[in-house]
Every structure is written in C-alpha cells, then in structure tokens.
Image 1 (cartoon, rainbow, N blue to C red):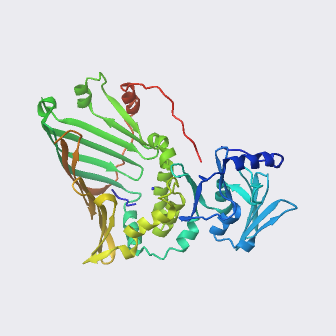
Image 2 (spheres, rainbow, N blue to C red):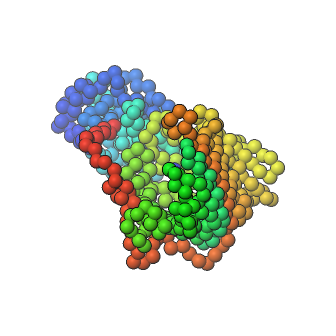
Image 3 (cartoon, one colour):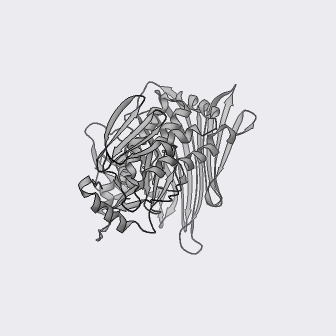
Length: 466
C-alpha cells in the first residue's frame, strides 16, 4: 500500500563458416524475424535477419546504425576478418568466427565472451551477429517476442536521453513514501465484504491488527459470517467466527497462513499447522512468460529507497523484460509519462490528479495530495466500466481500500457481485513482525496440497526460443 510504484548456444567457428552460411541461406526466408530498435522497426535493404539452429542473427551495420552509430564509423577489415564500430568514446571490435568481442570505453578495454560467433553472409557479404551480442557489446536491453517473431533491442540510456518529461511531483511522492521506510507500524482497522452469486448471499465483517515493516508483516483477524452458501448457514458453520492469521517474509517471498477453525471445517485432520504459499517460486515458474522474477522485483523495491524517481525510472526500464513487441521500453515509458509525468497531472486546490485510459473503457487514476508543497498522501483507482472499481488511498496515517465487482459467471442470468470496504490506521511502534510461523510449528506447502487433489494429465509441452 505504501509504494506506487515491474525479460541455444551454437558457436560458428571459422572453419565451419561455409556450413553455417549454407544453413543461413536455407533458413532465411520471407518470414525472416523482424527487429525493433528503441521501439522502431529496422529496415534491412541488403542483408536480412536470419535464424540458424534456433538462434536469431542480425546484420551488424543496419542494427548499429539504428543504434546511433554513423555508417562511416562501422568498418570491415577483409584481411583480418574484423569489424569495428565506433560511437563517441565507445569502440566495439569483433572477428568473424570468434566467440569474443572487445569493448573499449573511456580508454578502458574489456574482452567479453559471446555465446555464438559472428559470420559473413556469403550471399550479401554482410556481417551477421547473434542478437544477444548487441546487449553485451553496446550495453542494450535485448529480448525476443516469440509470438510475432521479433527481436527487440532497446538502448535505455538513449531512450531516456530523448525523453523531455519531468517528474517533480513523483519526486515529492517518493520523498513521502520514504518516510515509511525502515520503521515498524501497528495497523488497526476493520472491513466488510458482501458477495452474491446465484442463490448464495454471503456477508463477512471483522476487525484486524497488522504489524508491518519493510521486510515482513503479520496480519491477524477473526471473520464473522452471515448468509448461506450451498444451503449451509455460515453463522452456524462458524459460530465463533473464523480465526485467520497470515505472515509474510519479504526476504524469501513466502506467505504463511493459519486458521484452526478452517482446518476443522474442512476436516483436513491437521491441527496447529501453518500453510505456506511461495510467491517467489510462483513468479520463478512464470519467469519465461513474465521475464521478471521475485528477486529482481525485490531489488528494485529496495533500491528505490536510495534513489530519486528519475534514477528509479532508469533502473526499472533497464530491467524491463522485453518479451512483447507491443511493450518495448519506449512503449512502457510512454505509459509512465501518461500517468506520472508532471504534464499528466491536473491541479485542483492542493491535489494533483492524472488519468490514464486503459483498454476497453478501463482507466487508472492517480491522485497526489499535498500540503505546503509536500506530498502527504495519495489515492489510486482502477475502473472497468460495469465490471469493477478498485481504489486505495493513504492520507496522513489513515488508509482506505474499496472494491466493487460485478462479473458474469457463464450461465444465463448468472453473475457474481461483490463489494468490500477496508480501513486502517497506522501507528509507529517498536514491535517488529515475525514474518514466519512460531518456532517448531508444522508447515505444509499449500501448492503441493492443491496439486495432490488435481487430476494428472498426460502429454508434453514444447517451446521454442528465438
């Protein structure tokens, strides 16, 4: 709530260059991969990108020209079979068939190992290099969109150098956010939730207490139920309410859940047992699609405490997973600017509000509250017309969250509706959250338990990497 502010190897040895060239000629077809540099499609007039044994090779001259290297500063020595590219104080040198590249910057030279060698295309005489070479040599962020067959190359520094937006309001927000860093808080509040689905009508109310820090959180509540589900009276099912405790260890990315009443109602036979849910592991499994693992997110979050917003923006964009040709660094920066740049905000009194239109009638609104020019609170709202409204705000020490949903569930006339309201008051405390279960407590993996109840299906999955 307190932070607003997230992408195989084959060596082409010189002695095998004729074989590689023949393979390239066989695989270079009308559906050759596209290349985006800093969000712009690169046009290849002589040599075109080629795929050799599942690896994407791109013409060095055209690509480096798109990255800002002058054509005259990209040279080829036929005797030594060496290509050299120069831009300012940066010099890049590579030799055909060798798995190394020499990078000289500010007079300091470094030899880098590459995962595949450059080669000369026999049909055009142009030097082709594996796309990952560009990341190592030119310091770019490189990715691959397998759905559109597109190599993505982004020079984050160059993109930001061309960015003319300013972020003074977000700098003030970040200063406000940092006032919470390194401190423990006791949060007390209440919540209500009403849900209707078909004949089921459920109401949940309760008070809660939470201890939170920058590294852990402990949450405790007792839920009082009213209404019924599947013909069962929930108040009778949980006459004393449903005790619920959650602990979160940010360092490991693991949630721990405990509810003795739920154990009894579910007749699991387990008592005194905590259930763990490994958020970090789930993000790791999704890494191939999301391109961003938990440790990367954690490092970005922790680094933000010592950064300006401009520095945090640069760090975030440089770590951006490039797996979607429609979400390059330039695309993401444009979205950030539409929501967070000074030019995006409209002032009303001491509050500043920006609104960003999402797809299909949805929108996101960010409001920064100020006093004497200093940010002292914020509100975030996301709405999808007719489907969902979610908002969260923090003013001084008071937090509020509200949500309403109205979703079809598949059957004719069938829908689920839900509303929720939650409040909380933050008070600084010397007490620290545990983040983990008590010493000696039994712990069961919730994911493994769920999987044990799911049917096992056969079949194999295959995937290709560009």
